Amino acid sequence: MLLIMFKREDGVAGNETIIASGVKVEGDFTSPGNVRIEGTVIGSVKAEGDLIVTETATIQADVTAANAVVAGEIKGDLTAGEKLEILGTAKIHGNINCRTLTVESGASIVGNCQVAQEKTVAREKVRESKVGAEVEA
Image 1: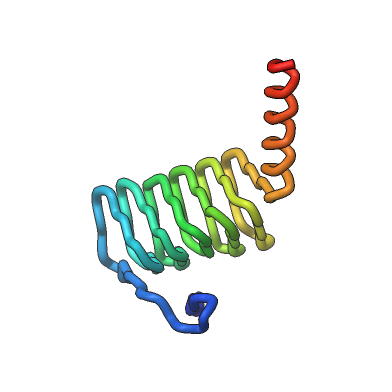
Image 2 (image 1 turned 60 degrees about the vertical axis):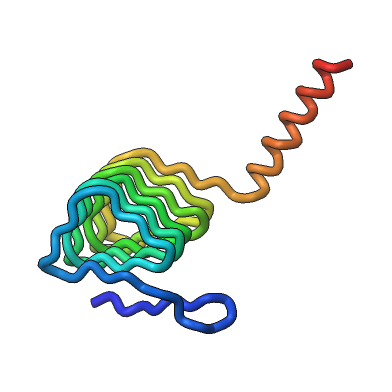
């Protein structure tokens, strides 16, 4: 069983929304805080905080979160603004986009993975500004 508690940098636990095992949510789900999904979600999921997808969770949606830990099944694209941890029980059928990726042995991923570090983004901005400077000259 996955037992994780997210805390803000100041050490205070944030608000957490829980979709319990046996609960089914259909539609666009948005949360300003952390989200823990143990049940089923069909539609879209957006968490401005951190996301936990437990082993019992089934998600048929595009998912976006600041950070995520996935142990269940996701059918849809998954975007984590920073860190994404995929545990050995996870099954992901969709594209992944994040800055830091950890994948445990046994995890299943069917889709493309794009892991972009800040340095890569910075290089792209420098490259764009050089191209712009050449065009202006």
